[in-house]
Amino acid sequence: MKEYSIASRHIQSFLLLIALPVLIFMLVSGYVFRQEIVDMTAAQREAAISQSAGSVNAELERMSIVASSLIHNRTLMNRSLEYVKTSSQEQRYEISFSFEEIFNTYFLLSKQLAAYYLFFSDHSVPFVSRNYYSGTTLSLASAFDYYNLAAAAPGSVIFPDTLASDTGGPVMVSLAVAPPARADHDTGVEMLVITFMVNELNDFIRQKHNSGGTPAVSHTFLVGRNGMILSASDPSNIDLRFSDIYGTFGRSYIVMQTPINASGWTLIEAISIRSLTQRVDIILYILCIAMVLIVVLFIGYNSLFFRRILKPLNIVISEMASVAKGDFSVKVPASSFTELNRLNDSFNVMVTEIGSLTREIKNEQKERLKTEIDVLRYQLNPHFLCNTLNSIRMMALITKNDAIQKMSAALMNITEDTLGREDTVCSLERELKNLDSYVYIMKVRYGDTFEFIRDVDSSLLSLGIPSMVLQPLVENAILHGFRGTSQSGTFGTIVVSASLDGNILAIEVRDNGQGMSAEFVDGLFRDETQTEKGFTRIGLSAVKRRIQLSYGAPYTLSVASYPGEGTVVTLLLPILEASEYDSRISADESLDPAESEEGKDG
Image 1: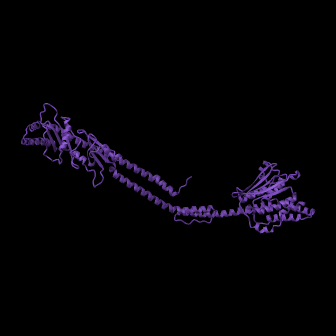
Image 2: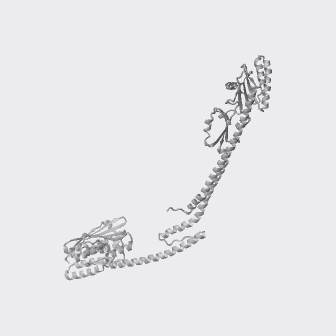
Image 3: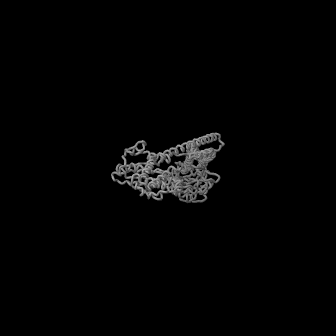
């Protein structure tokens, strides 16, 4: 299970349950509000464009009517015939005044100011309006271009896909109309070209979309029938194809367009979405910054607050770790929080009581363990001493030789090393020397019916083992494993070996005696008082119990035996240090097991 600190869990809860929902709500609300502004503005601007297009279309239709009326005006027809037929410049000059009067009358009625070219059927120089009130004049070359367009459709009003205007000046619309090709039309007018200003169109194209030098937030276009830009709020876009400009807008602009039916043109406006939502974006940006500041301040406050609370708690936790390691002298200092002081006082009282109880329990266990080990030590086959002394007595009566002295010396070594020392741990070397003394005595008792082999590396001799743990194992091998082998002529072998397996010292006592059944091995440690054919199990049980009491798992004694093959007893011991007692008595060694040959005479 993953662990979390209180402060981190509190911060996570705040972020997940408060900060994140509020932030999501702000962003969603801002997006909805932003989209609503965009939709409302788009609807308003679309209505405005439609109104502007309708006004422009009405103006163009009105000028179309004016142009048609002029081209069919009987007075203009007659005066133009007179103008064509006379070659007198004075008469033509006088007639031109009548042209001005006719046009002025129509323009006055239509409330429009315009400039015009009047082309005559004799292909003479066209008559040009003398009024330059528009501020812009149509060049003669452009007038002839319009002439060619209208000549292809006599009787129809043609709006060329070009505009007459200076850069930055007012937008001037031109139209051209030729008289219908009818026999009853007797007129000197061949073509009429009129240039006029449409206020609605100028207002739409030249509207101020920005102020104070800020980037334009809206772009307006007048697009011709061929898709080319006739006029635009940015003059650099004129004469470009609108489809190329449209590709640069992408999704950051709203593009609205409305057709002008009279001319076939299209009014287009592209509005920057960011310009519409700039204030909302600023508000959202400020709110997000405020939310971040709130989170940062909360985390800072949370850290400071929990630091003051968790510092005393961490002290308690640290002291608890010390208590877990067995140090019951720790004390938690007082805190500035009442609740923590109560916890600290309870903890200190608890540690004091646990320390007292632990010391009492340790002392009791130590005394009980010492007593039980002492009892086990004295349980280790006490009849051995009686039998040995009896053998010495018999040998003293019968043999009257030095075997008595050597056997007595061996017994003295064993007795002094086991009963005369306070320590329960000796070196493996010392234990093997005692075992040599014991084997010497047993060979004197039973004759040379078995061989004793020590297969122990010299590097292991300095390791410590519990004293008198090997003697009971060798004794069982001699008394039980080789029972009856002397009569059958079988020669027994006992091998004591040792090895290291990590931090475990493994010692094996192996014999090639008669072995035991699996059922008997299973019941070896269940009932220590049972015997079978003179074999007692108290020695094995005492050794095993002693090891388990002293060292615990995994250190123990185990037995493996096979009938007719022999028995292997394995001791698993920790790595111990030999006591100083070994060095004190090493100089007093008086028995050399190699001299045991002399004892064979008994």
